[in-house]
Image 1 (cartoon, rainbow, N blue to C red):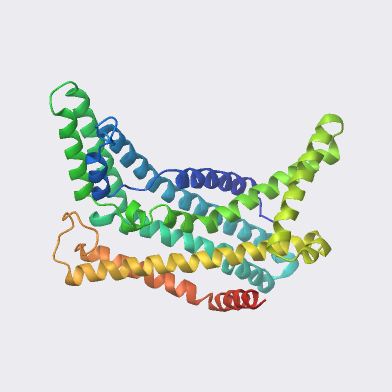
Image 2: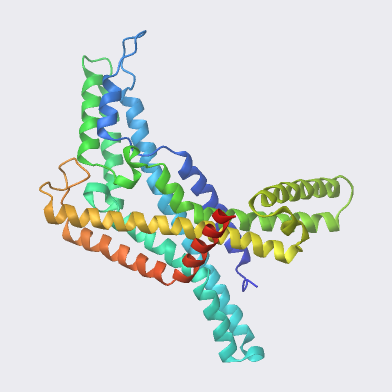
Length: 359
């Protein structure tokens, strides 16, 4: 059913899940104002600064790593769906003698439309948006991350060389604050604007599907190991499968009615779980669309009415280059068309939420 690309898809799913989890764990970009307040805050017992230059540099570097992991997770998910399309093409070509060209093309169109093609577009548009137009007041995301890392590492090396000199710590902290204010991070990744929430919203539709896909593969492997082996290995596999099944039954009995889940067979349970994941992902995709739309409106407003330049150190009101503004608006327009193509599912999701509230 995967056209010979099952192993590649499993490896890419595993890598995307690991990098996505690591991205969510790392902290967002600290704002220059928050960092300045933290550096001047003193405790009543030690009378010392609560944030050193080394700690601030580590926070900035971790945040740039978070930005990179976010892009890499999207790239791996995109590669997985490209391999799925390639597998579907190979499988369709092999079935042409049996099904005919028309039926094989119809099956390939169904795969390309939902969900493989849709999530390929979802990952692609976010990769373009983050990499080319998601770099804060510098516009380009890749240049923003690399330039910020070089500046922070250079300041750290200078501070290490000047260790022991008078005012070395103050000078290093001042340089870090200047770099952070002049190279402001994108507002959706800044700590003061929910920088920990937006990556979670972006990656949850991907991680849900990838983690569940990996769990299904592990379940299949354990089932095969249980049926082909005995003794301790067979008992261990049976215990793991029973525990996982009990946890899944308990969770799904809470989400949906207990009787409906218990009476369903294996195929119906898979469809119910897939429908639940699809509804959660669709709700989060709408929120991601609001983020892209808000980012495009803010960029257009700053370009039209903002008086500052791209290095003014502010986020709202910065005048970005015209190509960055046009790119942000194009990404938002394409994503809105993507959501409009799924408006039937969105209406069905809203209707199901209203019916649950009425109950």
